[in-house]
Amino acid sequence: MFRDAALIAGKDLRIEARSRVATNQIAPFALLVLILFAFALDPDRGILTRATAGLFWVTVLFCTLLAVQRAFSIESADGNRDALRLTALDPAGIFLGKAAAIALELLGLEVLLLLGVVVLYDASLDSAGLLILTALAATAGLASAGTLYGVLAAGLRVRETLLPLLLLPVVAPVLIGSTRAFEAALSGSPSDGWPWVGLLSVFALVYLALGLVAFGPLLEES
Amino acid sequence: MMDQQAETTISAASVTTTGTKATRALGIVCLAGTALLVFLGLIGTPEDEVQRDTVRILYIHAPAAWVAYLAFGVTALASVFYLWKRTRSLTWDRIAGASAEIGVLFTAITLATGMIWGHLSWGVYWTWDARLTTTALLFVLFLGYLALRRMPADPHVRAKRAAILGIIAFIDVPIVHQSVEWWRTLHQDATVLRRDLQVQIEGTMLFTLFLGFVVFTLIYAWLLLHRTRIAVMEDALDEHGLELALEERRAEGVPDGAPEGLATT
Image (cartoon, rainbow over all chains, first blue to last red):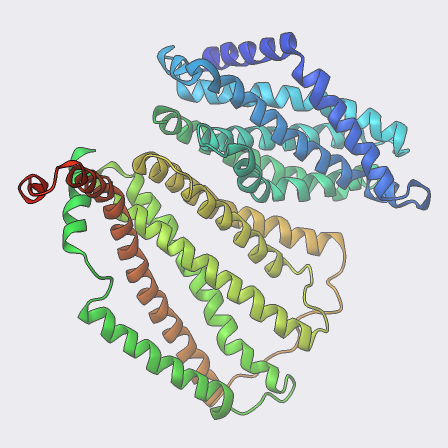
C-alpha cells in the first residue's frame, strides 16, 4: 500500500513540477489573496495583525480547493481514471498517494504564506514548534478530506461548483482549530494552542481512515 | 444490478398515487394534532413569567430541531443499509434522500424560529453560540448532500456517492460540535446573551411541548412516506418515459389507418 502511495504521490508531484501549475498559478494566487485582504482590512489600524491567523488559514482553504480540483482534473483527461484502476494499485494506496501529494503542495504553499504574513502583515514567528505541528496536523486533515471529496465529486458535470459546497463546511473544524492554534502561537501564549492540535489530529485521523475505506468503492464506479 | 432495476420497474407499475388509506389516516391525525398544537400553543397555555409570549415559539422550535436530527440520523442509517451489500436497494437510497430533504427543511424551520426568538429575547437574530453555529453548519452540510443528489448520473453511482457522503456528513457533526464548543469557550467568555433564562415548564406547557414532539414526528413520517413514493414514481417515469416517447414517435411515423396495430406491439 505504501509503495503504491509513493508511486502515485511521485507521479502527481512530477506532473506538478513539470506543468508548474502549482508554482505559477496557485502560489501567486495565494499571495494575491493576502494582498486583497490588506486592501479590504486597512492595514494601518491593526486589524490585519489581529486577524493574521484567520486570514492565513482562509487563504490555505481556498488553495486547498484549487489543489484538489487540480489533482483530479489531471485524472479526468484521456480516461486516466480507468487507467488508474487498470494499474491494479491498491485504492487505499492511491488515496494515500494523492493526499500526500496535495499535502506536500500545501505545506510548500504554507511556508510561502508564512513568509508573506511576516513581510506583509508584520507577524512574528515565536513558538515555532506549535506553528509547525499545527500546520502539519491541519494540512493532513485538509489533504485527506480534500482527496476524499475530490473523488466524490470527480466525474460529475458541475464538480467545479459542487466541490466547494461539499468541502468547505466539512473542513470548518480545521479552520477553527488551526486559526485558534496559530493565534495562540502568534500572540505568544502557546499553551492555549495545544488542545487544538489534538483536535486537528483527530480530524486528520478520522478522514484518513474514512478515505482509506471509501476511496476504493468511489473509484470503482464512475 | 439487474434485479434492482427490475424491482424499480415493478414498483413503478404498481404505484400510481403517493397516498394510501394508512397515509390518509396519518395525514388526518397530523392535521388534527397540528390544530390542537396551534390552539394549545397560542391560546391554551399561559405566557411565561420571564419570556412572556415569546415562549410560544419554543413549541415549534424544539420539535423542529428534534425532527431535523431524527431525519439526518435516518439518512445516515439508510445510507448504511444501502452500502451494506446484503440490503442494497434503491429504496434505501430514496429513503435517505427523502429524509435529508425533510431534515434540511426542518433545520431551516429551527434556524428561522430560533432567530425570531433570539431577536425577541436577546435583541439580536444571531449569536455565535456553539449550538447555533453547529446547526448552521449542519444545514450547509446537508444542502451539499442534496446538491450531490441532484447531479445527473447513473442511479446506482449517485446512490453510492450520496450514501458515502451522508455517512461522512453525519460523522462530521460531533467534530464540528466539539470544535465550535471549544471555539466559544476557550476563545472568549460566553457572550452576555447566555441562556440562563431558565424556563420553568409545568402542566399544560409541558404537555403542549410533548404534543409538539409527537405531532412533528408524525408529520415527519407522513412527509417521508410521500416523498419516498414520489421518488419511486420519478424513477419510474425516467425509465418509462423513453419507452413512451419511442412509442409515440413510432405511432406518428405510421401512415394513417394503421397506427393501432403497430402501436400496441
